[in-house]
Structures are given as C-alpha cells and as structure tokens.
Amino acid sequence: MLSSNAEHFYWLSRYAERAENTARLLNVNLELMLDFPGDKTKALKPVIEITGNSDLFKSKYSSYNHMNVMNYLGYDKNNPNSIFSSLLQAQLNSKYIRDNLPKESSEQLNLLIDEFIKVNASKSVRKRTSLINKTISNIQLFFGNISDNYFIGTEYQFIKIGRFIERGDMISRIIDAQCIKEDKFIIDEEFPTLQWTSILRSLSAYEAYRISKRTISRSNIINFLIKNEGFSKSILRCTNNVNQALNNLPRSKAVKLRIKKYRKSILRARTENYSDSQLHDFMDFIQRRILEIDKTISANYF
View 1 (tube, helix red, strand yellow):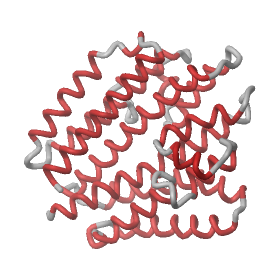
View 2 (view 1 turned 90 degrees about the horizontal axis):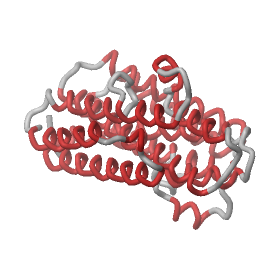
View 3 (view 1 turned 180 degrees about the vertical axis):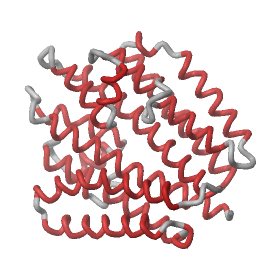
C-alpha cells in the first residue's frame, strides 16, 4: 500500500474518532450544567481547555456560556478541533481513498456533513443540540460499517491505529480537565462526585464501571479509565489495541519499542494515590508520549 494511502486511512480514523469524542464531551457537559450549583461559565471553561484551543476561543467570545461553547466546539469551522472541522477533515482524507472504503461508510460521513451545513445555516439551538447527539451514533455506524464490510488487511490496521491513538489522547485530556476543575473553584461537596460521573458518561463508561465497581470514587474511576485492560476506552486498552495492529504491519519495531516503554510507565504509576497536581503532570506525560508515538508512526509509514 502506498504510504500516502496509509496516512489518509490513519487521519480519516483520527478525525472521525475526534468528532465522536468531542460530541460526547460536549453533550455530557452541557447536560451537567443543568445541575451545576455555581457559576456555569467556570464549569464550562475546562471543556474548552481540553481541546487545546483556549486562545482562539477567547479571541472570539467574551463568555464561556452554553451557546458560545456549543457553537465553538460543535460548529465553528475556524476551530480546527470542532466537530464540524473534524468531520470535514475526515471527509477530505476519505476522498483520496474512496475506492478503498466501504460505500456505506463514505455515504454516512457525507450525509452527516450535509446535516451540519444545513443546521449551521439555520441557527436553531434545538437542531444544533440534536445534531451533536446524532453525531455520536452516526460515527459509531461509520466505524461499524468499516468493521463489518472491510477486509482486515493493511488499510484496516491504520484505521485501528488512528482510532485508538486519538481515543487515548482524548481520555487523558478529559481526566486532566477534571484536575483543573477541582483546583479552580469550590462547590458543594456532592458535586465532585457528579463531575467524575460525568467523565464516565462522556466516555460511555458509566455502565461498564458500575459492573466492576459498586461505588463512585475518584481513585477507582482514575484506575478504571487509565489501567483497566478489560475496558475498551481505558488508556491502557487503547495502547494494547495500537500494539496489536502494529503486529500486522512491517517495520514496526521502533514504534513498538516506544509503546512498550509507554505501557510500562502506565502500569508503574500509582495513579490512585496521585493528587490533582500529580495527576495533571501524569496526563501531560501521557499526551507527550502519545505525540512521540504519532511522530514515530509518521516517520515509519508516511
């Protein structure tokens, strides 16, 4: 397979996963604000910080209110990490490899983008909120069509690698944002539990967590989202999935060596005992390691 094709499969997958993750994050946090007892703008600020585009947001908006945050993360094409921008980038990559993609997946992506264009023009709050929710199920269907209708060859491995690299990065950012939240403002004693529950829900992890744990606690949730190899959206499981895909590719030694060191660091970390500051530093470490893995993949294959 041409290296350019491999790169398009990789980034198609990353951008599609990013769109779904951002939709989940936005949906859950906007719902959480209905129960928030304090200044809602303080609670929504870390949601912007997760995406790494705080300066751009501040240059365009004066307040972290519901509408501004939804428009910026959902529909703003000038924000490179908005849902709409991610979908457009996924579509752009898909055009280069359209003959190698299941027809159903390409159609699913194109129809979703058409809806974003129409809803963005309408300015309807109800329609905008509804489409963000719909994005989650549509991207799941997009990946489902690939999984059900695609030959498990080299191309599929890059789809898998891109998806789980992106997912691991987003999990670390969501956990990191919670550390920032609790350090920045004080609210009633029950709300931190509600916030940690919202993290589970934003990753569709709540039901899986409650099966394995009886109570909602900070330390249990942190370990579950970082180290639980049985859960598909833990950082360690994402790492294992990337490594598994690399087993089916040539020239993977350098990448696998980085992943091996990264995996050992995750397993050694006593994250359940970390303070917010220590956990923030560890999530920053994870994001740097993921970036290094991404660069090594690019150097090897693209």
